[in-house]
Image 1: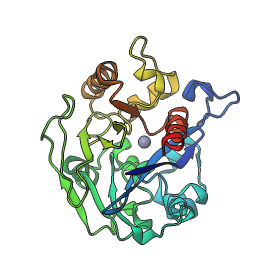
Image 2 (image 1 turned 120 degrees about the vertical axis):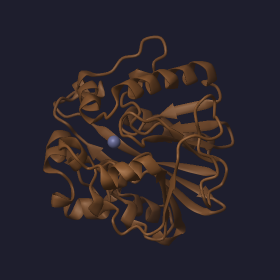
Image 3 (image 1 turned 180 degrees about the horizontal axis):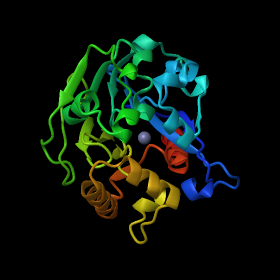
Image 4 (image 1 turned 45 degrees about the horizontal axis):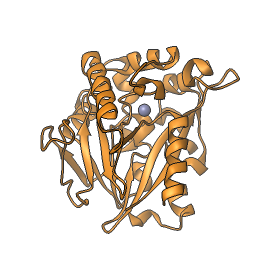
Length: 280
Ligand SMILES: [Zn+2]
């Protein structure tokens, strides 16, 4: 299965290196990672970043508070549909969307791909639909981004283990090489998505962590800006931090077999893009 690594959104919060650890100026650069996978069952998109409607009419579709905090750069050329077409495919070729969670910066492109079946943890859909209470919950979940979806597939936690993690296998209509790996904490139904390619496993950890230094097994660390943002957005700190521990253990013990990356670290995403080009 060929995997394309896409950046489907850019956030430039004020704080520069205090967020991304690398910027020279006052603005940071955070990515919104997505993967487009060519399978025998058609194209599968993992996460969708911001979509065409987010770019054209960001408000009130998205929260002004979140936009101000993140300083979102709305770029049509970064939308998944634009990149799908640039690769020579059409919107209808995308048959499945698998989501780490339903936050506004992951779910924005769903309705640009109307033929896709949408897969997500049941707990996440439930939280986004029925538990939008509180300052953050109302601003993170934006039902207008997915209220036209008719073909949802939702999954309960539990299942056959994958390197010691629970894993949901056999997503309906998808090849067995794509798994949901529940990693709650950032949201109630947050999950990583594991994909087996020719060389081994790649785990898209979504928002289970935000900064590459958090996966440094010897000296885990995070920038102050991303530490604060993760605290603002978390629903369950204990689970979130425990899952970060488990991901570091996974990297320590299975680093040869499993490559881990997250949604918003642009340096990590660039590394994935380079290695995909070299092997693909
Ligand atoms: Zn996110």
